[in-house]
Length: 388
Length: 173
Image (cartoon, rainbow over all chains, first blue to last red; front, side, top):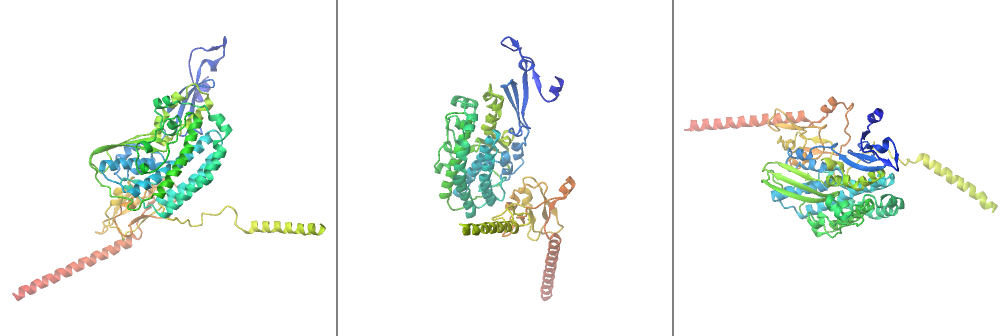
């Protein structure tokens, strides 16, 4: 007993359990608490405390805070423009979405209007970021199930987009390219050429091959269909966000409901599924990739000419702004307050992954232990965004 | 039949020989990339280059830096009063210092294509010493000193001329 406790397991005393008149011993009498996470290959830097009764999950308690960086506090020590380096580090996968949201909030307070070219450029970059993020989401979901080929294929397609970002901003991941008042660099013809090449590769090479092998896959369907089902009413009650919410049949998309940047002028659909299980969430992510590629093509076609950046004042008048943007993982809220200084007084970020995380205890009641990683991966969360 | 088969064998054999010879002589599938200079097409945010002759010492780059890794080192000359020194260990290579630099047309602080930056051994002391300092700082300081001397000499000459002119005026009166 002592040796087991030292190994990291703790036993919680429960009522005596008898099955068909027989006492089944220690494991049946007591619940076992497992630490699913930190060292688990699928968990990332967080821990789920899982209480199991045999193979059945009784209770789940997420334990977060392993990658807390105090980004909201750090923003208070920055100026209006260089705060983007902290905002973009909310999650390195789709950094353009967070920078766009912060920039729109700052422009609202300062009363600055952005030129049209910057709006279109932001749209292209945001959708590029969404594609980059969704590709890793797809790959890691299949990776959790035990097949790593999907991740390799997704990374090949992702690399082309990262090359385009590097050509544009000079860095692949931490681009720091969208600032209050427009975008930082001039969008050149070379960047647009490279972006079109990347989308061509995605549409002609990646989609058909991936669809054939990893979407219409009988083994994958067997493993993920009917796992972690969330009906429409419950999804709204739990407060899900992003692709998991849309997979439950709720048509919620900030790009469509409250258009920002150039989304109001472009034509695209909101992808929804009715089933609400892990496979539906996986399919929504894949379908959204196609929509994003469509949006980028439209934005490149209607790319206007003119200035790409306007002057942003050093001191911004006191005021408040709340802005929602549709980030890769859902609706990201920015509450920005100015006290008339050279930098933000306070920034509060409302993250979608955090909302999805607290649906886990409700969703994982009464499932098998082997389904924990499947549901966890299907919720499509980012740890940097949970902890901030 | 016999003739044909007799011809076929040497043809296949020569093909094999050619293939093996090609494999031996031609470059392999994996390329050696580290001695090739990777050319960036537009710009890359790498090592800083600071030009002391162009710098005006306004310290806008130090103020724009989000991680406060730029230090203004006083030169002892009037212009530039101080020049930036980048602590490379803390730098995040965001390039905001380059944006903030007001010198036109060429910027005094610039991020270049150089991406090979390493410290050996990577101890804390060595990393703390790893800084990007302005190029030709001593030359620039000497130049600035000479300029200052020139300006002072000219000022004094002008003063002397003024005094002479005043004396002449007084004498005429």
